Length: 333
Image (tube, rainbow, N blue to C red; front, top):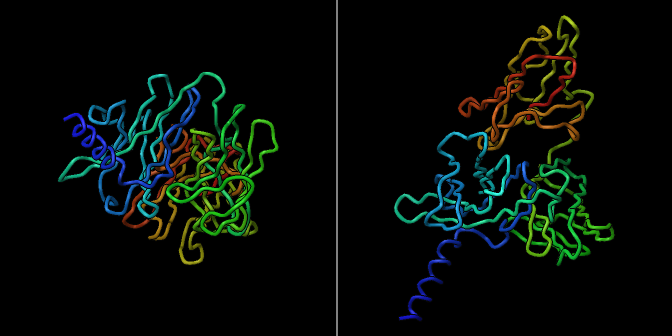
């Protein structure tokens, strides 16, 4: 009887974790009060299923924190990339209560499927972290990401979610060259060269049993003489507002110039093509695309200054900027 019970437990564990490849997030060190985005893998048979984040140590007793069929909250948000088959959950205002979670998929005619990850919340420096969890780079270019770690980090790797890993000194992931430099103190630097469109996705800094997820977005480099976004605001009027969508930019009639009053607000429609229907859209602030910063995203809550909504039928997302000042310059992507 004892052996039979052990066999049943093993089979149940295999069933719970069966839907996802081995390279995924399981242990992340995070700072109290901050936020973290965790990518969750799923297989193709679950593309149109409800995904969710479940909170608790035990799978059978965890409680829903956020679901794709419900609205996000200030604490939790979720978005689903059905092309890469990764849904992303974000946990804000991290506390010591944010320890054990499960990436879950709802199964209508059977038991739900899921796998766990653990957040190690610290008030000091995280054991493994990066400068920016969201990175952007240009097609054909390169990018270097610094993975900061404490002493005695264990084996250091750079992995693509659900794919493969590279260890020092070099290798490749899906045809993209990867080199790892461990010469810096308490940091290993990962450089990816010859970036392709398909290089976009979630990657992991791995140090021992810890991982830290990084999302890379690779886009075509815009012609800055024609496609930059500029917003000039005087004391009385906004004189120019050029909002350019970089995707299929030659094919659409779109907003290029608007005059509005300083201190007022403006809503700008941003077109996108059908292949991006289920992608995250966002408003980015800054003169240069490569160094602009996110202001509002479809997978995060709106603010008093910025709001964003996505109408997937006409394939237009709309960004609203309130209380306009001469500090407002944006890309809608």
